[in-house]
Amino acid sequence: MLVLQWVWTETGKEAVAPRVVYYALRLLMFILSFVLEDWAIHELVQSPRERRIAVVLVASSYVTWTYQTHTFSNAVETLVVLWSIVMIQRILDHKHRSSLLSSALLGSLVAFGVFNRITIPAFLLPPGLYLVPHFLRKPFSLLVLCTTFFLTSFLAIAVDTFFYHSSSTETLFQILRSDPTITPLNSLLYNTSTSNLSLHGLHPPYQHLIASLPLLLGPALLLFWYIRKPSLSIISALSATVLLSLIPHQEPRFLLPAVPLILSSVRLPQSGVLRRYWFVSWIIFNTILGVLMGIYHQGGVVPAQLWLGQQRQQYPELTEVFWWRTYSPPVWLLGGKELVTVDLMGMKADEMMDRVSGAIGRYKGGGPMSVGLVAPRSSVDLDAWIERTKSNLVFEQLWMTKNHLNLDDLEFEEDGIAGTLERVVGRRGLVIWKVSRNPPA
Image 1 (spheres, one colour):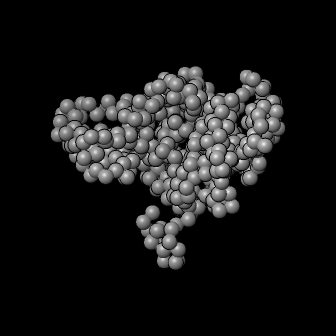
Image 2 (spheres, one colour):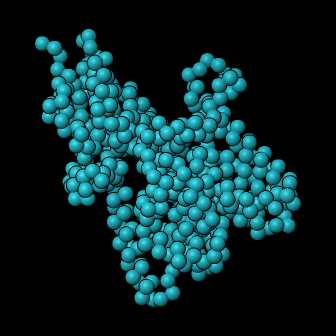
Image 3 (tube, helix red, strand yellow):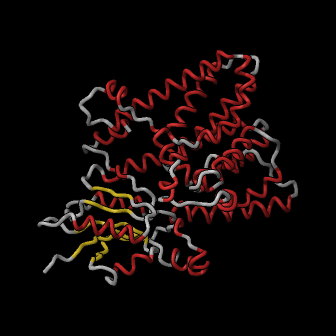
């Protein structure tokens, strides 16, 4: 980003536009994925023929060219998991060496991965157990691994503490002693609370098996019959699926690292006819899911936030915006504009409207009596309020895009398949509302 800032200032402009930063980060993630993911597969798959198949399968998966080109923590986790397994494999392949460099890199990767996403031990713990005999023979390697792990962890704690206490008058050393920010601990405490997870949605323990894996892999699930042999990659993918299924809240993106691990561990059918049919189904599946997940699923969040960041002069009364039933909006896309962003996640409709109505009430006494609300058009719970049959609130549509599907709002049990598709697809879109209350006469 420093290079981008330098190039941008050469054009005579002071700050880099949020839109430019966003697409620069997308490009960076594409390059990282293209280089590091393929490189890791070359390391993990030894046979040249099987390696070519693995690279083609991973590159043609919609997961690679949608999720992996986003700045999701899951996309970063995928790269960390792959290269951690590469380091483990390198250590195991050289049993008679100390492999100090690989041990040091593994320690740093694991620490970085834990501070990025607390779920990474689910992918690395089972493969890591294969290192126990090596560390018993080469204890100095374990010491090096632990040293780099703790040094990287300390650096991460210092960076997070500085970021979240940047307005403090104390020195960084004083804050580290009294109130350090330990991100994995905070994440663990939050995600072990069922009440917190219920805000995001609770799922049965078989959700990953019957929904997440089929959504991510599609026809590739049939290739489980053609797994070459047990490897660190497949052990990591399967163990993570089982362990993450124990968590009440489950989303397909939690299993992103499992996709390249599985695709690099399977073979194609031997029969030429079966192989052709499989490839056709694979192309169709990834084309449909690529468009669906790469363009439409939550596709209006970034454009909506960019639009809000450009409207402060036109709508100065909008100082607070509530987001409901969307992904968490990236606040930095506002470009430093003074706009309070409140993420209501999947809150129930009545509770959501209580929050919105209460916020409008805080602006009495001559101030603005309106707030913003960003919500999917498919949320029919809003209709009664918009039509003013449940309150005296006034909804004014400021902006809308139809390139938005809220696939987290599928209610097949309540609405049936046809009713759900009619609501979610037929009423696709994301809307920014200006919600106000008429002042008393």
